[in-house]
Length: 162
Image (tube, rainbow, N blue to C red; front, side):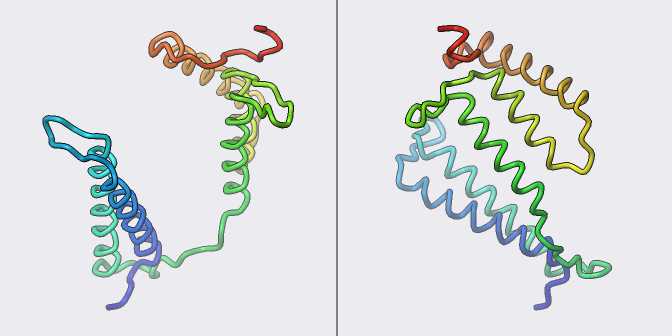
C-alpha cells in the first residue's frame, strides 16, 4: 500500500505508538470499573483513545489522495529548542535547584521567564506584547491555581517572602 500523505502517516503512527505505550503502562495499575475507577482507568482510556485516533489518521494517510504527497520537511530546530528550554526553565524557576544553590523564584517569575523564552520560538518577537501576555497569564494562573484550587506552591521568590 502506498503512503499518500507522509505527514499524516508519521503523525498517526506516532499517536498510535504513544497511545499504545500509555495504555500498556496503565495496565500495571488497578483499572477498576466504570462505577469504581482505579488509578489505571483514565490513562488506559486516554491511551486507547489516542491509539485509535492515530490508527484512523494512518488509515486516512493510506487512502486519501493529496496534492503532493505532503512530504515531511526538515526539523524546526529553533522552536523545538526554545519550547523545551522554556519548559525546563519553568521547572527551575518555580521550584529552584537546591543542589546548585538556585532559590525558588515562584509562580509569577516562572511564568514571566517561560513566556519570554518560549516567545523566541516564533518568527516575530515584540517585547511589549510578550510582557502583556506574561502579565495576563500570571494573573490567570494565580487566580486559577492559588485562589480557586488553593494549591500550595511558592508564588513569589523565596528571598522576598522569606
